[in-house]
Image (cartoon, rainbow over the protein chains, first blue to last red):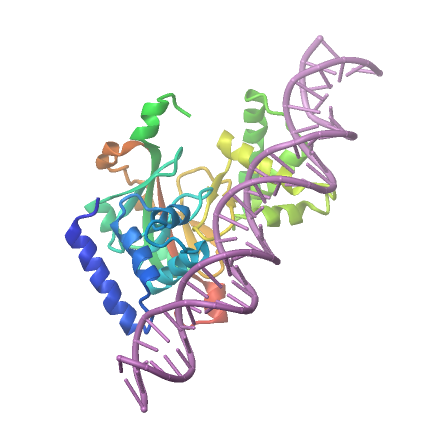
Length: 152
Length: 152
DNA sequence: TCCTAAATAGTAATGATTACCAAGTAGGAA
DNA sequence: TTCCTACTTGGTAATCATTACTATTTAGGA
């Protein structure tokens, strides 16, 4: 679980920035952001929808999709994860890195000072205007290793 | 374009490895691999299918999908690209990195000795068994900058 | 040349994502 | 507090990428 204080900081920032951007703060938007912001394993759309069903029985999938796209445009979340997987979202917008399980798609954050200090290589300017650099480690998570340790 | 010699090396390796793996070398498979291996911009399924239509008028989309999955399983290609995009494939299995355009999805390779020398951080072992480390630079490509230089 | 398991073509099915529109609501104005 | 309006939502239909299915074809060895 995310530390309570971090979660509250994120929610506070969200409220402030949303007002600045003239975005209405609806209960749905707040709830959806809260789920992403409170999660450590980068939930997908379906999972978010299910998790909110108790409190919002009528919440539509479309709203979840729309809201996540909105949050992404505003910079509150990032879509992450490997190809061949459904969309997953990450509310940690600080510089960090992802460990992704090749079998089950689990994504966990990790920190590494050396990776975070990496500069965008100058030769990418030949290709265009670089904006961000991401590092991703692929592997097999502990749960999957336990289920079936054999390689491949 | 990829250097002719590199392309031939890749095709040769493919033929050899396919025999070793007891995989039939059909004209379709060879042609599909050739398109990916000869391309610099990491084509998608639709693009590959279209490109082969002249020589294989009856080639089915399903065959393209199936073949690419097979090639991926055998380690000849990797699925690459950002979330929110359709599948794209890369036949360069040497250590290298990607520049991805946030607007049009274009993906180009680039080399960087410092990035290629990166070791997988030890702390990821807590999360599972890491196998690979990928670096991706996100930005806007030259063509998109030309079309519309304004940011965002 | 023949045989058989493996591969393909064509199309249907699936599953994720997006579009649409009538109904509801946040948030400012009176 | 009440009202008003533009913005949001819910529910569902439509779309699009990907995968499954099956009859037919073919690669590659005997």
